[in-house]
Image (tube, rainbow over all chains, first blue to last red):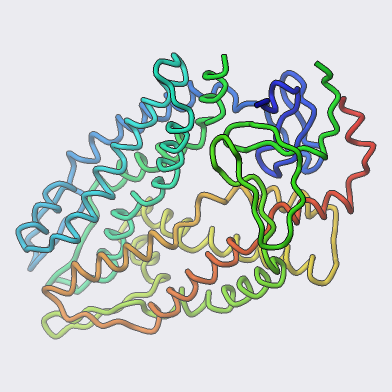
Length: 201
Length: 216
């Protein structure tokens, strides 16, 4: 099976029009957007965003994400201790959802992209069909880790009863958001076609 | 290898770059890549009509979804309720600018821009008012593909209700209903939009065939 690259044509990522490929930047004849045959420096960008996400993920777990004030006394909760509280209260389904969305998904995304970059670079035991499926799953998972941020935002807004009870967001929320957005950038800058190219070599 | 190919007779897979002859599809059919299984092209049924109607409905639901209170809490005799818009005001008031910005972008701004974009495109096609600027417009529309997070926000509402229901009296308001419908409308308007058809038609109308050969 021939690929577009071998035949000297390139696919516009925005409007999916085939263009005659030149080296360097190509201007799409249909939508006039500029693009390259493969995403440029794809692996390096993915790796860089990934490291940044990993670093931001550390303070996201160490600092408190939510502070609940009751009668003026504040109690802090990190992501993990919040999940522990749910388990103590017997709210298992929510504990599982939060644990999946805020710990497992970001970690799986970061580790998964590291593995994909490694495979695409070295080509060791590379199975493009399987690995591109993994990439799709990672891409799909991206926005769902924002769940925790939205939950805290809603809690801060709804539970605002003056002195009796109020909720404040902790510093971890910013780091966590950064982690999620960086992993989305990382997934966006990875080019799954590199997996197939490497296999074909 | 002869590297002069007429590009309009071929289609390449977006995920693995495999090259195929362009299939002729009827409405409702889709072509999948043999190698990686992702969708090559798809002809959607009644695409323009549907995306026009869904995005119009979505824009009408936008105001109630944003302004009506989504849920309220009663605790120790005090009652407090909040809408999506209050949510942002409160967050700004209390100095959480980053979350306020995120909620505004991903749960309000991006969905609105996408809905109005889909409405504008399907409107121009429905009433045959095609302009060359649509080429740029539709390309810009694709930039926001990944960044609408209404569905995640919906799950966030469910989770925080679950959290609150234990030790407070929770009341659900009309805003939640409007928000759910808004979510459905904006998802459907994005799903109904047939990109291949729109690009094909825009190309036929505005791009001269000679432009293809100039590059090669």
